[in-house]
Length: 187
Image 1 (cartoon, rainbow, N blue to C red):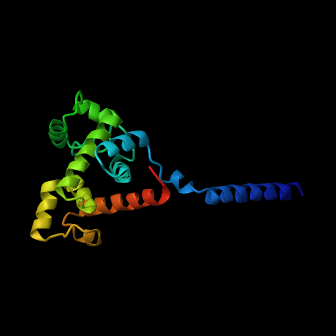
Image 2 (image 1 turned 120 degrees about the vertical axis):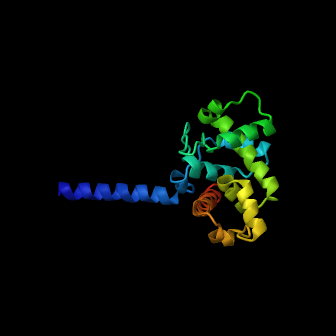
Image 3 (image 1 turned 90 degrees about the horizontal axis):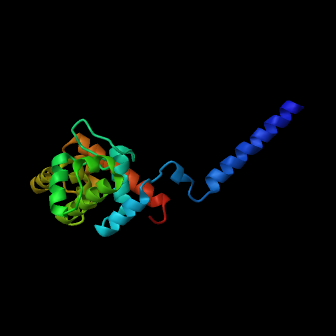
């Protein structure tokens, strides 16, 4: 009898937890969290970028883990290549930002990465898919693909991106972007 009562209590707890989980309006945010929201929001406003795109890129690049350095040498949350970071620092005219700071400090890395995304957005006339591809492969390669007709820059033709790593990267960023925009009502 006591054993049956324990099962009922456990069943009730399980049903209650499940109901709370699925009836909660934002339960999916547990599986798709966005960290550094204030920094992303601030820099996205400054550089007129979609904060969900910035968050999706960070999610794919480092899953919000600071201090990362890739095998190729990319640094920080947004995995900026050192040469790209140096060029962007000169163009963006950000005071007191060093490569070491970009690697360790989320706000500085998010600011420069968002500025760079904004620069790519201007270069590719706001084509979000081309911007994502250029963030990964470099703007020169993406421009060449577009000019030579290897890829038309559309989401429908992502499968035609010549480099597999970039193709997969774009697909992952789009996936997280869509999850974020569906889950979160606002940033």
